Image 1 (cartoon, rainbow, N blue to C red):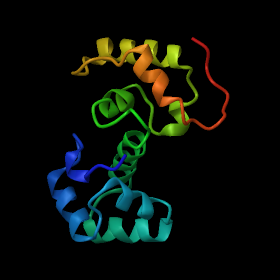
Image 2 (image 1 turned 60 degrees about the vertical axis):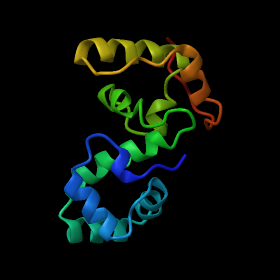
Image 3 (image 1 turned 90 degrees about the vertical axis):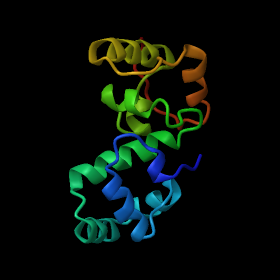
Image 4 (image 1 turned 135 degrees about the vertical axis):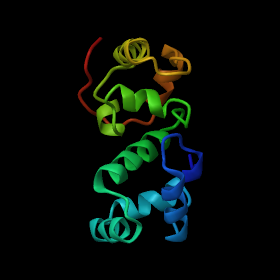
Length: 134
């Protein structure tokens, strides 16, 4: 799925503007840049976005692009320590729902915890990996 960078919660509006000025308006634009360390470094220098901030934005973008995750679950996943597809797919759907429920309660993350059926859909396009059992 493609989203506008401006649609994400937690991305500084000034950074959204600076990214837009640099030609980065969507998740697709961001991912094209993400794979090129030289361009990524140049953009950070040009915009004043720190490496830590840029990595955080990258996590949000990568998670939102997983089919079915969308924008609504990104903050909960980040709060649970999941920063991209690789760390998400270390879980089984059952273990992930449990982890997200615990995180929502502990950290008081707003919104609803996705159901097992919703989370299971996230795994339909996953690449083979070893998963953590519930």
